[in-house]
Amino acid sequence: MSDLKRTSNEAPLKEVIDRWLKAYRLDSKMKELDVIEAWPEMMGTAVAHRTSQISIRNKTLYLKIDSSVMRDELAHGKQVIIERVNQKAGFDMINDVWFG
Image 1 (cartoon, rainbow, N blue to C red):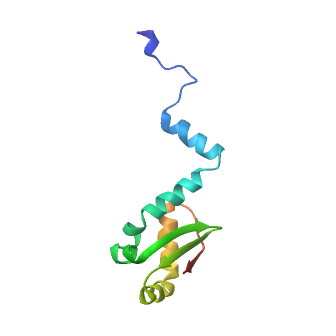
Image 2: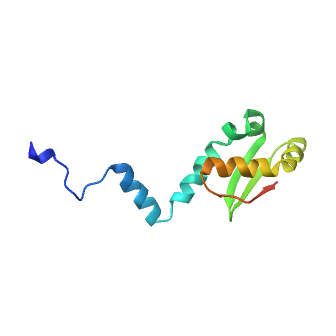
Image 3: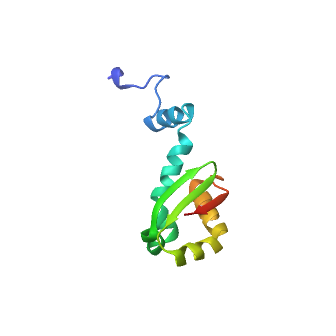
């Protein structure tokens, strides 16, 4: 029965993975993927269906929107997009949005 006891050098898997992601600086990349995956939830299905590409580089969110009307509307609401993305990420992930 003593074989099943944890030793002091053992840690929960989540903790080990979190440390590994931070050590290899992949934790922010994982957050980016979480934000991209949550795009329909953050912006709604209408915007999500018109968005063909999403990427984040150098604290800038790049969006390719298929509708010029929707692109113009979203351009006027840039600050709302920035706030939603940063809130979802839990830190200031982006500070600008570019539309293509």
